[in-house]
Image (cartoon, rainbow, N blue to C red; front, side, top):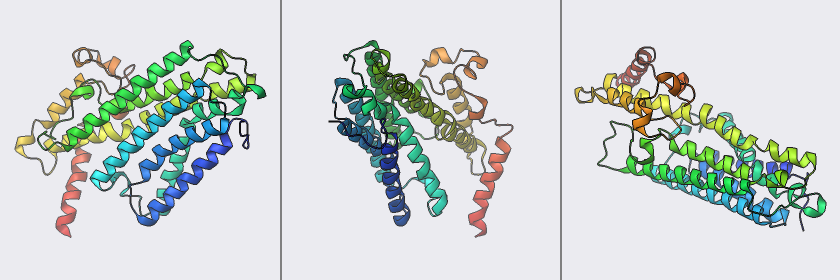
Length: 340
C-alpha cells in the first residue's frame, strides 16, 4: 500500500530527506575539515531518494522498478568513483578556499541539496502515489513503450560514455609514463574534451523520457501530467549546471591557461615552448562536448564550432587578452614564497 507523505508527488518529503542528509554531511565535513564524504554524500543521496520513493510508493510496476534501478546504478557508480578518487588523492582542491569558512562551505552544500532534489524529480514523481497508484488516480500503461525503450537506450549510452571517460581520465592522470604536457587525447577524449559531462546529460534525459509513459500513454489527470512534464527541469538543470556552472567553465579555460603558462609562464622551460601550440591544435580538432570524429571536427567552420557545437567564447582562453594577466598572476604566485 502506498505511503502518502506530505504531498501526492513526494516533493516535500524528498526535499526534507535531502536537506537532512546533506546538512549532516556538511557538519561532519566542516567539523572534521576533510573532503572525503562531500561528493559521496551528493551521489549517494540519489540512491536514497530512488529507493525510498520506490518503497514508499509501494506499486512496484516494472517501469518504476527499472527507472529506480537505473538511477541507483548511476548513483552507485558516481558516488563510488568520486569516493575512490578522493581517497587516492587525499583531498579535493576545489574546497581549499572555502573549507574553513562556515557560510561559504555551507553554500556549497545548499547548492548540492538543490542539485540532488531537482535532478531526482523524474524518479521521485514517477514513484509517487499521484502517478503510479492506480487506485488513487495513477496510471500504469504496459512497460515497453517507445519512450521506455528510448529512455533506457539514452541512459545506457550516457552511462557508458560517462563511466568509460572517467576511467580513461583517471588512468591517464595516474600513469607515471604519460606526458602531462598535453591534454588527454585518447579513447573517448579524442572525440570530446569533456565526454563525462555529455554522458551525464544523456543519462538524465534518458531517465526523464523513461518516466513519461504514464502521461503519454496512460490516463492521468491534467495536474499529474503537468507534474511529470515539469520534471524536465531535471535534464535541463543538468545541462545548465554542466555548461554554465560547475562543468565546462571550471575545466576548459583553466586547462587552457595551465598549458599557456607551461610555454610562457615565469617558470617555463625552453623544452616546453611547443606545449601551447600543441594544445591549440588539440582544441581545433576536438569537440568541446558532443563527441565527433577529430578528422571531421577539425575541418568544420569556426562559426559552426562556436555556435551549434557549443564552443562558446566564454570557454576560450585568449592568449592576447588573457595571457598577460595569467603571466602576471603566475609571477606574483612565484614571488610570494621567495619574499616570505
